[in-house]
Structure formats: C-alpha cells, structure tokens
Image (tube, rainbow, N blue to C red):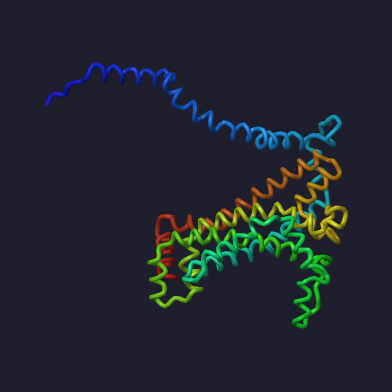
Length: 340
C-alpha cells in the first residue's frame, strides 16, 4: 500500500532538522525554557555568592598571610608547612579521630538495632519515631548546656554512679572523660536520625525474606546479621559516609561544653576536647590568622575525602565481589543465599 506524504508536514520536519544541524534555538524554545530557568535562577545566584565564592576565596586565602583588615601577603605553601609542624594541630587531629571512633561505631550499631526493633510489630511505632528524631532537631547549644550540667562533678551522671556503689568520674576534667562525654552527646543527637534512615531501608526489603528466615528457625540476631545487613549495604554506606563527614567536623560540643575556659577555645583541661574545627576557629576568629585557618580547612577537607573513600571501599567492597563473574562470585552468592 502506498503512503501519501503531507507536503506541509515534510517541510516542517525539514525545518526542525535544519535547526538541529545549525544549532540555533527557535524563538518558541526560548519562550518555553526561559520562565523555568528564571524561576530557579535565585538558587544559583545565592549559591554562587554564599557557596561557590567562599570556597574559591578560601583556597586563595590559604596561600596568603592576612589578619582580616590589613593587606594580604603572599606566602605560598608556607601555611601548609607551618601546619604540618604544628603540634597542637596534630593533637586536635588525634582527639577528633578518637571522638569519632567512640561515637560513630556505637551510634551506627545502636541505630541499626533500633531500626530493627521499630520494624517489628510494636505498638506506638509512630510515637517512637518522633521521639528518636527530636534530638536531631534540638538546638545543639541548648543540648550541650544541659549535658554540661549532667556531666558536672556533682551532676546527674556521677550521682547515678554513686547510687550503684561506683566512684564518680571526672567527665569534664580527665582525658577519656572529656572524650566520652562529647561522644555521648554525638550519639544522643544522631542515633535517632540514622535509625530512621535504616528503617527506610528495612521497609524496602520484601517481607517474604523475613518470613522465610523465621520458618527456617532463624533467631532475631541471625535475621539481623544474615538477612538484613547484606541487603542494607547501600544504606549502611550512606550512613557511614555521612557520619564520618559529620564526626570529623565536631565543633559545637567542645566549644560550648568548655566555654568557661577562655571562651571555649582550649577544648578543656589538657586540650583533650580540642577538635580540628575548634582549633581552626581559634586560629581564624580568635587570633585573626585567616590564611592559616583556611589552610587548615583544606587539610581537613583532604582528611575527610580520604576517610570517605576508605568507608566506601570497606562497605561496598563485598558488593563488588558478589557481582564478580566466574566461580568465585558464584560461590559467594550461593553462600549468602544459604546463610553461610
């Protein structure tokens, strides 16, 4: 059967092809895409002014010696050289890593257990979810002031220890007491948030997997570690990466908790609560060494990037092994299915 072509339609198609070849935009296209682009332009303007420009300027500033008022003096990489020889900076790095380890590992484990319990058939699950999320939206300054009273020498924490026959702890005066108190505040704030993230991942797992595991006689712990965790790997990766980024930028807890000592710039006795960001704030805004603070910020960025890559490889490495072709990948997948 013969096909009759419409001359008008053919000419319109030829014009569209010609426009595509020439790269020109028809006037109707500008009218179509102009208003949406104009509507979202305020975001890009604000981001350029308050987001992109400060990042670029901080990179430029890290090569300058500047007190914030006078003229800038170019010093090149000397700021980074001074930073690498700064003993207080490396002490703050060690403190940050210790607090991060004491807070992040228990927090993620508790969040996973809470999410698993909330996913079970419990009454008032919605009320529990709201209660767990409230600490995340509570003012950090107000929360730190309350915890400062709890961890005082005559505070609630030591009163509970003495009630069970134990000696009080110098929460705000000893090395591990300071790190533990800051870690407890971080856990209290973020465990509910991560529990809701894990709960969203649990709800995406088919219920048939849980039912099959219970029929096979698996306990709750076996279901958690052999059924839930392998399927929650992307969610665990997200929680681990975000917790690492937040944990290496600790500031408010140490600054407010020890505000009575030199306006919170020392990090407590022995500088055991001094973190990287607190030391950055001290150098930049207390001693007006803005170039030195900018260099410290970029070194912190490099540390966070390295730890993010490590977390990525640790959490997602086994997932790549499962997708590997050949006998090894086949045996790994079979072992996971068989629960071995």
